Image (cartoon, rainbow over all chains, first blue to last red; front, side, top):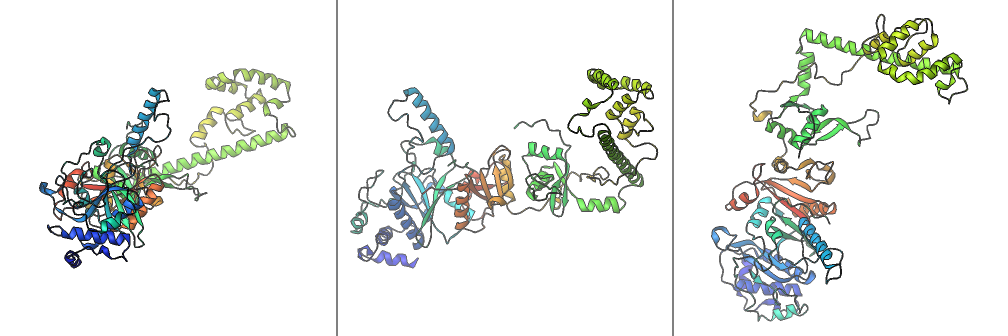
Length: 255
Length: 363
């Protein structure tokens, strides 16, 4: 896109414009950072990048996700030939405040385990005797940014899944917000203003790709199931809806 | 799943095609394909008197074109064009003269039997009504047994109550006994009439004879035979399986979602038409009588464009009814790096089909 080059020429992020909203400022700043990178292959269209950034912003501040990262390139272990390739469409990954998806069998398993522990502890132990769902550990999720006006095909979904690892790599892609990695962001309000100063050189890691996607507490349920992503669909009124998409047949949850 | 003791149906069995519908008329076949081939179909036979009661539909069973095609592809069924078969069989002299005559004779025989039974029934009713009127005008509520006026008969009654069981067990002996007593003992005769036959008052019939008569036809100047409309035309006609090699032209036409149907079916899902949920198929993980469905399925071409709103709507509806919304289609090669996904997802029958499940994210 030609607009991309104009953004690259700008010496400072245009986010300094005081009339910009927080979202505008964020997008402008990220575009500026992204354009400063040495160009490797084709970039996604500017509107797709902006779309991804807007959705990341929504997840961060509307849904309290943390450790938001944008992936402009594929991971080494999923791309063809074991090298990273530019994505046609950037993917987002992030850590939701609580688990987004629990497979029904995993849920049964967790409840069963909770029941067993309660029986063993005599009902007076710490954390036992609590009715309801046990706490499930958080898991990083892939987010696919889309717009409602787009038309999709099965082929494109297939291609997107083919480039994904089962679990988003820790530290892969580029971090979007300054915060403690893996923790809850403390500076929710002042985030954009600080970022808008343009002093975030070390923040955006240069597409460092983590080939090993296994996190510390790898959930066997997740790796044994088909891949999943969160389909984020933006409408013109900036409403965003989120749907979980599985790459295969996964039985539904019993909500 | 173990097949319950359903009778095995000789394969290939015919599927009757009528007005672009694929129908099965035989309950044995219907249970058989349900148990063995995971195909439930839809019962569409309504009651002529209450056509709006579509909860109680019966045979025939309508199969989706996909189901008919699948059965044909498996080689366990073949499609018979029913209209053509009837034209050929009945109007085009497809049946030989002897067959035709034999069939007409059997129809006449059935008609006679039906007429005989009907007559017997009216006769019985008339008799019972008369008896009631004569013997117990104002004792309508009390069973007939208690109303026998004569002491002789009531004595007999006591005796009969004790031995009625053995009478039933040894009817021949009883018949002989009653034959002997026919003229002597009127009341005994009445008992026998009630038990067996529509004997006219004047001429007592041999009970054995009259019972036999009700089974076949009334002898000698019997009633007019009823006109019988046969419910099936496949005793007289005979469906012949085509030669074992199928050409693809004989297979039923199917919608483009057939690969998805086949894929899901190969994974042991029961698939039902999905109109009720605004999709193409509903996928049940087992027999629909035992399980709720898991998925609302829509099949499409690999490169067919769809609106994201369809996905959102389907996902929302599916989650609302505790199901997943599933889209899928046959993977087609083309642009570059398809191999990875194709091998990972397309295994297990139904060609190379890849599916995606959509559920609401809950946020």
